[in-house]
Amino acid sequence: MKTIISNLAIALFFTASMSFSASAQTTKEKPLDMKQQINACLSQMTTLTPENVLTCIAQMEQIEAQFPDSVQPKYQAARLCLIFAVMNPHNDQADGLTKAANQRISQLRRMKAAAPSDVYTLQGFYLTALIVKDPKKEGPVYYRDALDCFDKALQLDPNNAFARQLKARFVEEANRITGTK
Image (cartoon, rainbow, N blue to C red; front, side):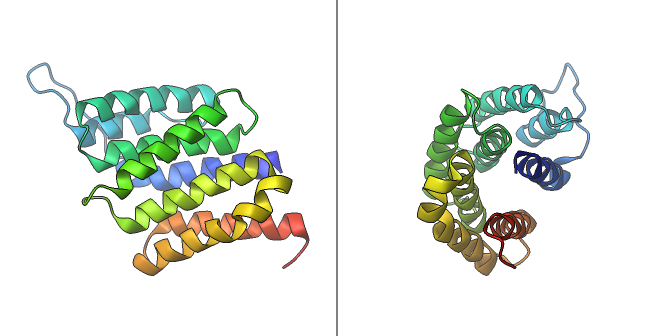
C-alpha cells in the first residue's frame, strides 16, 4: 500500500506542477516575481524525495511570507505538505505538516481569490492524508467526506485535473483495500 501511495503522490506532484513548469530567470536588477519564485521552487523537484519536498515546502513558506495575501503560495505549500504526509505517513514531521496544510486550507477558504474547486480539492487531499496515516481508524470516519470534497471540486470545475486524479486514485486504492470493484 505504501508503494502505491508513494506512486500516487509522485504522479500527482508532477501532474499538478506542470502548470508551473516555465523556467524562471533571475537578474540582479529585477527580483523574481511570485510566479517565477513558485516556478523556480517547483522546477527544483526533479525527484520526489522527502528531503526535496521538505526543501520545497521551506522555500514555499518563504514565498508565502513575501506574498501573504496571495493564494498560490498557500495552495502550493498546503499541497506539498499533504504530498509529504501521504508519502511518509509515519514520519515524525507528517502530523505537523498535515496540521499546517489544514491551517492553510482554512486560510484559503476565507480568501475571495481562492478558487472553491481548489479548496475542496485540498480538503479532500487533507482527509486522504488522515486516512493514509491510520486507514482502519480514519477510513470509516473520513472516506465519504473525502469523496464528497473531490465530487464538489469537480462539480465546481469539471476541468480540475488534480481533483480528478486524486479522486480516481482514492477510489482505486479504496477498492483495492476493500476488495471491491
